[in-house]
Length: 556
Ligand SMILES: Nc1ncnc2c1ncn2[C@@H]1O[C@H](COP(=O)(O)OP(=O)(O)OP(=O)(O)O)[C@@H](O)[C@H]1O
Image (cartoon, rainbow, N blue to C red; front, side):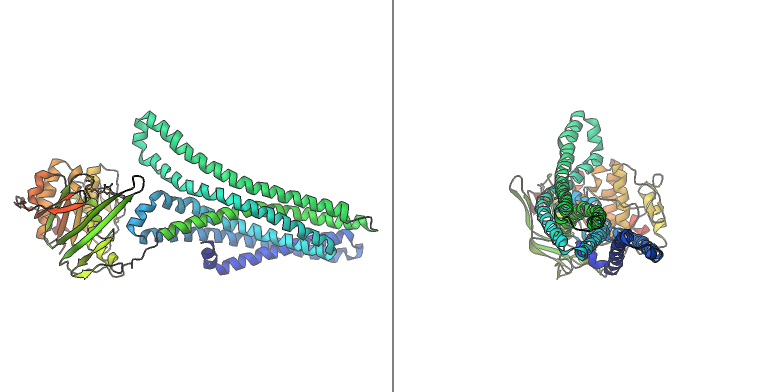
């Protein structure tokens, strides 16, 4: 993932890295100039002062350029990562997304993204300081090859210690990242379960102490431990630096004639090098943290990889038939080591047909609807649309034939519909008036003015959106369950017959046995097995529709 981002912004990164390297080189040049100023004759002073001033200005400019470019890179990486993950989520198979869970996606979009972006903040620090350290070592080699060899030996020792610490620390940082995905799920419960938590003191305490705090603590502990190991190894690195300084000053440089002069030179290099070395040791862990987050993002996005072909042309021909043959889907429940099997289902749908699907809770009605509309690909069996088999290549296209209102539907505040550019507000407001919502909410500039409505009212809004979509097949999953008797009546006696007249195909999942007789066909689901009710008698008692709802939308 990091490699991908680095590749994406190659030229910017090259420019920023070059500026960082120049900044590092400039810093070492300054050091060399200070050292020779301390030891040179007075006659060369003026020339050296000019050179010093020019180098200092260069160091300042390269610093500013590198910092600005890396900030841009960081922000760009953040934005690109977010768009990339969002695209992966949109194109992911629905079932994969269900299994992955919202919390992990949220965690990837927020925390992991920020940490990866931070890499671009720590990278220039690492780069600049690495150049300074390498420059100092080179300068040291120029002054004395023995001291240089000792430095290389000590750096080698430091690297081994750091690598061992790194392996240990990464294990803990990984564990923290995994726990954090769970934590995001708990954060969601804080808002989604706000009512339940306020109404029940014991539940609130258990949730906060046993669930939330435990998870927060685990992330804290694992991350603290991981980072402490890094800091400890930084301490080890620090110790080695001073051991090196001690060895050079007190052992290597013996009683030579120019001892003071040589000591001044080394002391200057050491003092100059300690800061960058410490910065290196502290920033490498940040880059490691970014790597852990990048790995998590990669894992999550790979789990969402889809084999489906996204639809390019959404123009759809008239629906003639949809046939399910031997269609089967299974859910595996890990905790109980149980399998729920739906099917095999043989079923066909034709235009102008109202089908009711009834059955007990958990019998598989919603699962069948998800299979029918192409949200789940069948594990075995086939679905054909107008006699064309549906595969990964055309499933996205197939889904465009459906409008659904599932019981866990989502309302977007903006009506995301094309083809209504000029009259979307007008049509939307007419539909709202038909559904008695005109005093509560309006469509303005293609958006609902509010979504703060009762559940029944929100479902009516979902119906408005469904009507605006003008698709040939409509699926209502217990739509009428939250409606008052008047609207239930309107739904079953007016809207459904109107849809039939329009030639729409409708699947209604329902527990309202008072209205079962209005169906053209009654299907029963029992523990994943589908049967057609052979005794069902359709008796149409629909009322004449005074002002058909679909007429408003001129659906043909
Ligand atoms: N996302 C899922 N992951 C795993 N198992 C699931 C999932 N959704 C449903 N199930 C299981 O599949 C079975 C059928 O569920 P489904 O939602 O299709 O039933 P339903 O007939 O629509 O129920 P209800 O009338 O309560 O809405 C249930 O036993 C449930 O435990």
